[in-house]
Length: 262
Ligand code: MF3
Ligand code: CO
Ligand code: CO
Picture 1: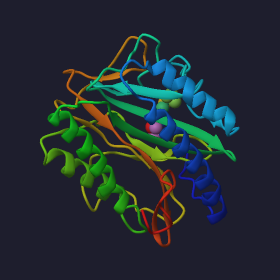
Picture 2 (picture 1 turned 180 degrees about the vertical axis):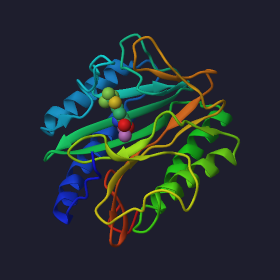
Picture 3 (picture 1 turned 120 degrees about the vertical axis):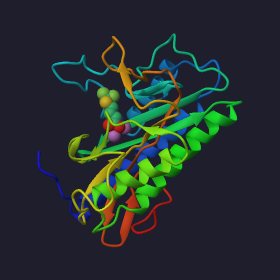
């Protein structure tokens, strides 16, 4: 599919989707405490979806080769990189780092956003990994302006992570988003500055660094969804949906953001 450029009015609608996604994700993250199962987190998100009369972007998602996704959240604890399936027997422990990814459709447009929550007493090493992943996302967000290239974003994330001794996951990438959750272009978390497509006004992308403490290799478990680090090292993931406006980046899934003020 070609890249779908959004009008100012469409971006305004996507902002409404972004605000709802952020609000529900806030509630889910606040509930991520020791003893709570990831299935319970999924329940909380479903209540939010019903209350706001929006549609899950995840539930039932899939292709021929994977079973339809059964949750409205992806809950990815510790060495799980992304796409962890909420389960009753997957119970949060003190010291966990848990990636929570949430996406909805409102007005027919997707907002896709994720955070890694640190639960209780997180080790200094794991804390650093999570903070670096979030900061790596911010370096890419700052580049979401007209004229930047996709390689600039990827290289910024990769350099930020690798200069701190981490690795970036290459098997999964960020993406355009809009009437479909996953649109062109792909937005890799690696690359060469000065290369790749230029960002245009009206492009909306989900940027989502996945950073590993150990090796970058991925293994997908038998459920065909859960992606873990091959070496079982820790991994963190943050994601925002960002519009490229004439004034600069607008982080649609961050309530405090406005056009040009990420
Ligand atoms: N939200 C994920 C992403 O950031 C994709 C989730 S796949 C699903 O692209 F099946 F869980 F929906
Ligand atoms: Co996502
Ligand atoms: Co995404």
